[in-house]
Image (cartoon, rainbow, N blue to C red):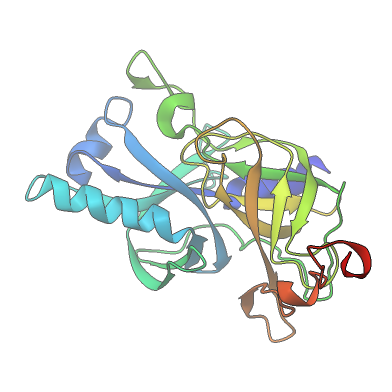
Length: 257
């Protein structure tokens, strides 16, 4: 992993959340008014962000609960500053519309509004790529939401966190059309939607959909994705049924005895 490659991944990752106040008040007091983070996303096209469907559904539930109170949902990027800035990073918040949502596979695509963000979409692995158990990976996202961005009630840092781990297992099969990866790492709430990338190449292989198993500190689950020859983003899906793997075992033992 090169510093340049890691920087490109970090700048592409965005937080997905909402503002407790109107946007004008938020920008007047940027250190005091937090951007409440519900999940993570990453751009797969210039104005298209991929995340988990359950992250979007969480925002919709919050909006329903808040009623007529100020509510602004959006995505926030931390990217290189524009020329002339005196800092080494800048942030941008953009509204979005839901372009696609599939609860069955927990995937959503958000269409960004506003002006373009000065960054490139992530590089996805090609369809021919096959993940392997033991391969080193690194998710990048907003684990624990705003907890790692604030101190004493004020914003004191920006940007996602990078973690490292390995592919501990593949599902449902190791080499024939795996659709998910079990990752040997722990992460926190709001990391859902984080891109999971190959540590050696910076290519994104999947999206974190579950940070813990049934609330226990265990392993993480990523849904595998790729970019096909036409440049379209696809979610990998197993093509072989489990019934073809399970052997016909006679419960009476060998030869029916």
